[in-house]
View 1 (cartoon, rainbow, N blue to C red):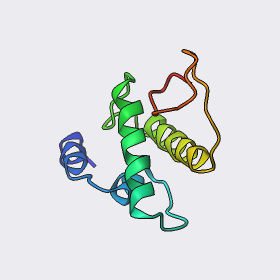
View 2 (view 1 turned 120 degrees about the vertical axis):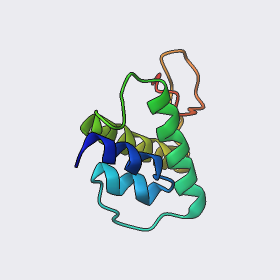
View 3 (view 1 turned 90 degrees about the vertical axis):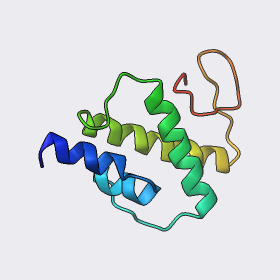
View 4 (view 1 turned 180 degrees about the vertical axis):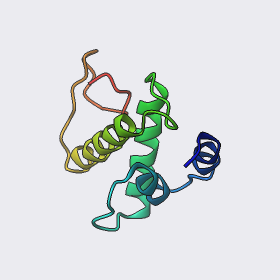
Length: 96
């Protein structure tokens, strides 16, 4: 796949399923719409605070998505995440 096609593909990524397919993450179980949005927003938030490029750093971005999934699941389970800055309500800022 050429770099030009990747950029076009990236611009079409809208759903969690789209991102997971692009990153090569198998979809094991369907998530609720709210959880999908939480995961996708957490991923985008973490990615925006990193130096990674979704078109270039696919493997690293895959790990960020897996981290976002885990973080949302921990939040859903009621587990507080303490960041380096000392907060206990994690917004997926990437500082934990």
